[in-house]
Structures are given as C-alpha cells and as structure tokens.
Length: 282
Image 1 (spheres, helix red, strand yellow):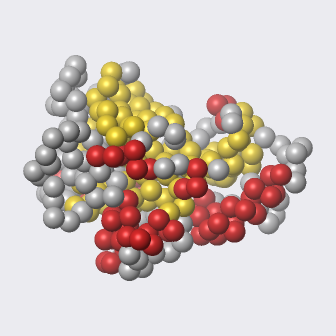
Image 2 (tube, rainbow, N blue to C red):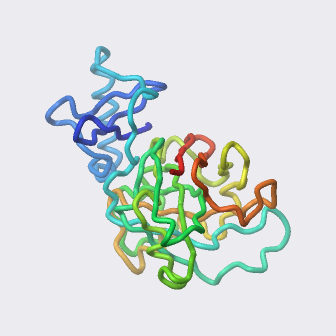
C-alpha cells in the first residue's frame, strides 16, 4: 500500500493512495488519524485498512495532484541519518567505516513534497540537497538482530537530507546544519515494506533537471537490517521513526560537487518504485 499526508485547512490528514487518487482514512471515527498510528498497528492494521477500502466502493477520494502534501511522516519521534554509507559503484571499497556513522536531524525539520525552502544566508550559504532512501519504522525495535530487523520496517519513502556542513554551526556532528526548518523533505508517499524490495533501487537527485547524484541502494555499505540492528542496540526505535540510510556520491558534472543550492533552484530527489520529492529554494 501507499500512504500520504495532506493539509486540509488547519490540520494534517492521512490518506491511502490508490493510483492517482487519495482516499482519506479519517472519514470514520474509528479510522487511523496518523501514519505513526498505522505503522504501530503492523500487519493486522494494514489488513484492516485494506478490508475497509474493499468494503466501501463508493468511498470519497481526491486527485492526489490537487492536494497540498505534507511530510509523509509529519511527526517522527526521531530521525537518524547514516553517513558514508555508499561505496563506489565498482572496484574495491577501501574507505568502508568499521561501523555505521550515525548522525541526526531534528523532527522539526520535516517538510512535504512541493514545499519552498528558505533559510538565513547569514548563518550558512553552503547548503546541499542529498537523496536518501528513508526507512519508516513500524513495530518497536530494541536490541534486534539483523535477521529479525526487517520485521520492524513499516515502509520506505524519499528523504532529501538537506545539509550544511559549515564548521562554525556545530562542528563535525552537523546537527544544526541538518535540522533547520524545512531541511528534511519527506515523501511524497510511503510505500509499505510488502510492496518494495529496497536492496537494489536506483535513486538520484537533480537541480533544475540537471543530475547531481545517480546511484543504487545496492551500493549500501551497511544494509538496512545491519543499520536497524546497530541502532537498536543503543536506542529504542519506535513506530514512525525515520532512518535516512545514506547518499551516493555527487557526480563530477556538469554542475560539479561544489555547486550549492541557490535561490530559484528546484531540487528533486527520486527513488525507483517510490516517486519524486521536489523542493523549491527561496
């Protein structure tokens, strides 16, 4: 299944995405009101939603393209980011770290598909867009093994790990440089784990339709099960938590690796089987 959130007046609503239509799930009082609630319900919860949809052929729906989409997870408890997690597309991998390099983004940085991003250029002008496969946690995970880790995945989404690495922000942890408002676009949808194989998905990023990244999740140095197991040894992963699994290297041209985001840019991250997530730079 696919899920999205959309903005309706002063509230965020959750919908099942069927083709190019969105079916709100909160039209019944007993329906789920958030993606985190759906993620926490596990496989039985998804089965109940499928049954609900099947039983209501006359259910109201809206054109997805006409909705103002919110972050696919508007209220994540935690956002973890894995650094240096893509090896070379070919040849030996001589720079693989000994363990996953874990950073973080604050939950208040999330934004939706089609959002406009602005920040104080006096704080930093060196801001980059980065495509990452986002893992959405379902069932709570604490000290799980790699063999059991995938049972705790609810689904997958696109993340634009917008980042500034200016050293005067916060040194080498980059928490502030990754967590300004709007620095974590998430979406446009979540695809549930039963509908996608994350091991070899092509993904990339463009600025103004010019490619700056193009890779595959087959290049991950630490697999999704390994990352989940590693994190869960140290912290408890809860429903709706996000893991940004890393980003492929910047392409050499035509924009080059040193081209930062500028006013008027349109940054688009895309992942095979999930979709495109677009952000306009103000």
